[in-house]
Image (cartoon, rainbow, N blue to C red; front, side, top):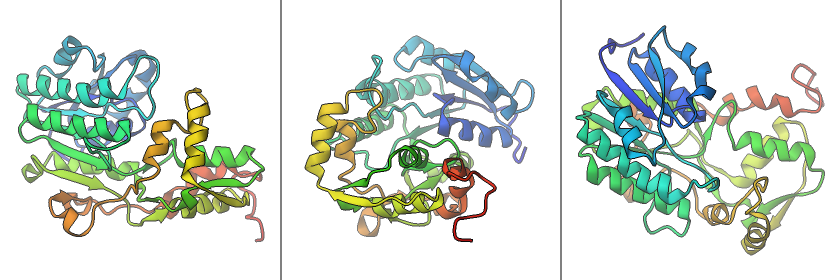
Length: 326
């Protein structure tokens, strides 16, 4: 444990997902006592070994239930809200979770006397956005700031790492698809993928620096890529050559309208709207009030250094075979 935080209780709302587990791991290494909420905590007992005996506790709480959230944050000095979804379904909406949920957590944290609130948002969050995902993320930020003075906002770009939903998804599609891979909008949309452990370290570092109170941080990796460049990288990494076919966005809209409602559809109508906007850290005059990973003392890992270590599973020849052409 790198820091003496045994007396500090951190409540992590929605901490059992891909990013949440890494944040819990990072906080545990720093010695915090951690209370992790989940709608179904019995499915997350494998998180207990991330800390020492008794360091991590799992509690049931739905962000839409104010009484459960109030109980979850009781006694916590720090609250981290991670709840978010990429697509609506099962009665869970962007409005309820991203906007209303963020407000509920912030109000509960303030009432409980918490000293810090970290609200995990996303690059592109904007109350005026066309995408419902981005709009409600922006509304959630506003509600968090209004209810909790000094709330810190973290906006990651696409988060990658073992088990991620981006590189694994496209690699899986390439494994089964033998046809030309569609490049909607010509594949020109830009992304700045950030390693999941770097985001977790950014959160942990922010908690030790009072200057981060009230600030917003956009978290991106060391390089910016177009969608076409990322797909070409995935194709080369899994050793499956695929042709790329540029397709205009309006055809993506048609596909999403016809099939986006299906649970197995790779993209929804709202995600089609998101794909029109670059997902990168602000630069120039737009970045004047926004911090970055560097401001939080994190030197980000690159896509090239990490992603091949887990995409080998999608190669036809397996992990240990000689690379083709070697």
